[in-house]
Length: 496
Image 1 (cartoon, rainbow, N blue to C red):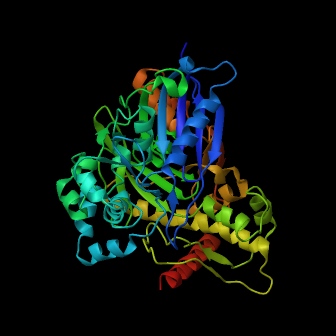
Image 2 (tube, rainbow, N blue to C red):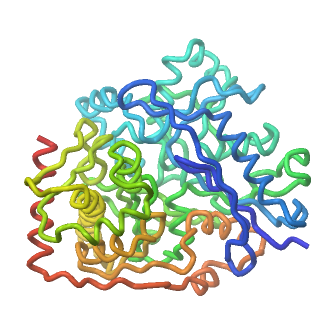
Image 3 (tube, rainbow, N blue to C red):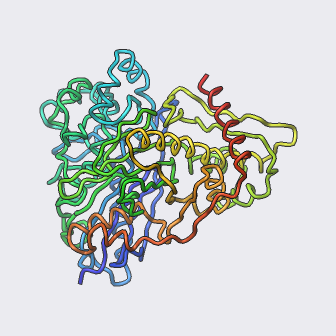
């Protein structure tokens, strides 16, 4: 009896496997942290072989207490997007470490393309901006800097993929080199209007078509696992990049519904329906999901540092012993402190897109202490979310669509009630935290389950969504405006 969907959630800092039952409840989870590699300033890498080994370990780890592979109806995969893997098609061995989405090594190349006036073309076709964040320039770097890689890629001897594609290749014993539309839409190489790899973009970035995976819907037949890996052949039936998976997990299936996930970074996604909304505020246009051949679009804003700021407070600054300490310290901080952290540790994401910006702490006085700095760090995530929501509202208004009226939140940071309330206060809108906060993995499970009939359709999934707690704005409008203006002033100084 197939009782569960197995969701693989391969993230930036850890790899997880979760079992979901027919009600969408997580029944078992295993997790393994992922080593971060920093070869140079601004460079971030992962060992792709380590990602695969960890994935296999955690998947086997949830098959305990009488649960076997025969109990798994299907596998859904969700992954850190944009992280770029290049491997040997015959041996399955990576030719270089994976280049992580946070990596900034291609910033100069992106600047050159901007200076040549190429960004308008790229945005018109992909919805994206020219930034080192995306996969295309990372892949070009690998082809140009790994000895023999370009020649081998042109011969079809190498495979490029985001992490989903890498894991599917390994799970299927090298039989399938595929990805889904959401991950493809983050490469700078995929035309989201035609839903195809774009020849003009491939030529612009110097990418041979032979290296690219086949692009499927988010609910599709991605292949079956090798029996020797988990003990049975299990279909891989659902795939989406982590933020799109969380959009599905949060049941944001109607235009105007918006979610924001607070993991390593913060990623806000707003469903725009079958209408592709062109951003005039330097947000990203992207694919929310593609099901049954129909594409649903979204606006997205990406913040590079969210939960990573809490890690910085703990690991580098030693101001907190654990993430949970941040809530207590923020509550005890001086509420009148004007300390503001602009967390541009790896540049600034949307809507600024300033890869060269660096972090700074402003507004300190003699009585500024650890508690005030911790509070400023949490507040910085709220301010950045306000940047995104305001920009999205403006774009939706220009497109004749309804602006977001509330925000559904998930991710590790939203367990912090102080942060969730501060977020509502700075946004001036309700913040809704769901009963099941494992929304990224849940979205992958829903996609796989919908494809095989384990779950119903999108309407059935939406009916299962429940709000655990809603946080309503309590801050006076004058104070909200004053604090946000202060933030904007310091951002301008960081940008220069």
